[in-house]
Length: 362
Ligand code: CA
Image 1: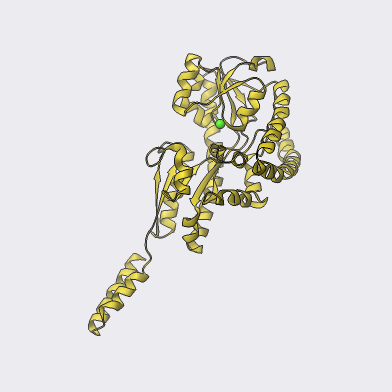
Image 2: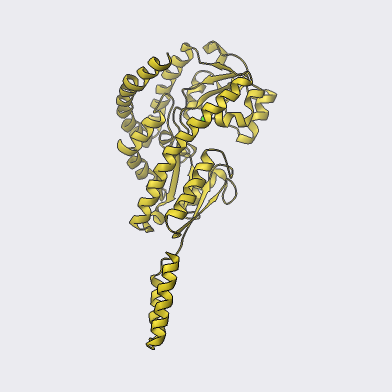
């Protein structure tokens, strides 16, 4: 295409020289050539971070090539251009055109944002994408983000997360009293109601804190990413989880920038973001299954929380939701949009997938 442009351009210049044409005409041809659009995309993950970082790198590469060179996306890993958790503000102000992160990080801006990331006992990754794309979720999210001059697209999903690594076996609610655990978000608030002392720690400090006993337990993501953190070396019990059944990642654009794009580019970027969203789940599925085999070789003990804890956590979830709804009108509005959709999803998923899994593996 560039070659064709060059030839046309040379032919025009040649023709205009031959006909003694004025310089202005050549100039106006140059102006009509499309200007390259640069997108600075900052992430909350380190450069080259497995699965999540890889996904966004692939998105950038695909957009660069599918746009025929019209767009140039430059991905900046965490802290390279803006601090990991500074991406929301930087994009809102237009210092960067886009970011890749997770909506629950911004609950301090608006408590409702945590719900777009998922919630304990909430949507699976499939159900979450269904709500976002076909159940009105994305529209509500976009309305709330518009107040911050932002426009979110789907940027992936971690799929079901593990409940975490515990140094001691958890047999009853009593074992959770005073337990120091690294667990953020709504999951942390639910565990706090069960007597856990939720601790927030930057990723780089979790392993040492667990090793030294500064914390007794930590959750992270799932086998694929947890194995790289080495938690199995210092905590043997690995629990299945209910706190993050399908956490959403976002690919968010500065809204003014987004609106300045042509319809062709908007539709291309939207398609590629849907691809990023879907493929990340497949990538997690592939890598988690393989990492689990490795973890079992290291003598990790796989556990499930006792029923007593699961039931208490469900009760605690509704208390947390009620409290948040009283504090924030937006939280209440988003929850009221989610709740009926969640109920009908649960019914179908139970009848279809849950029963199938019981027959396949039970
Ligand atoms: Ca997590």
